[in-house]
Length: 296
Image (tube, rainbow, N blue to C red; front, side, top):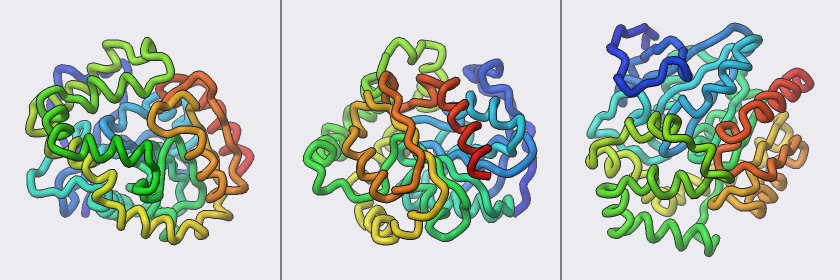
């Protein structure tokens, strides 16, 4: 697979002042994937979750690309990537495309940054020995069937009513996303537009976003396979950055990560929610810069 820049008209909604990076594309078996590749030095791979895209990492890319090579793909169906109808859109499907992406770019020995569904999508690379350092931000890597709070919500949004709300009301972006911020004012209309504009049509919300909502319980076997191999991560240099006001991922899930990564440096952000790097970007960037310097 050859990495190549595709000249493509910039979507009218894309804020190039906020996201000034050069767009690159790579052809993968599942479809054409968009990514940015900024800076030089030791590579950092940023893996986003739902319902966002690489835009969520813009602040970190700006800062860290001064001394590192920052690579941030958009999963198929998200951001500026292609949205093939035949693709599965489960986390295990995205994980396979991400592996193909890493192979296509010839990436080895990189720092892996995961957030939200980026955990079960990106962690197979770490478990396969491809990453040398790990950064976790409000994510998971285990089945949630026995978590009464998460499983109850997952059953609802993964059911018929959840499908209806995702398709017709864009619930993932208009309801769930704002509620997961520590301070909703930080999700400004300008920022929100960069995410809403990707999923303006109903079919895309069901095909891409609701597929991951359904996968919260439907992909339990994938999460279990990660959890069973968690000891492989124990000695990896790790940083955990956690927004404590996250309405989905609570402090008890941070404690679970600490059991997986007992040597990790932990940064607790009292006033941030699910997107600490969106809500307190300067603090998060500073923590990453310091940790990367100390763990190199």
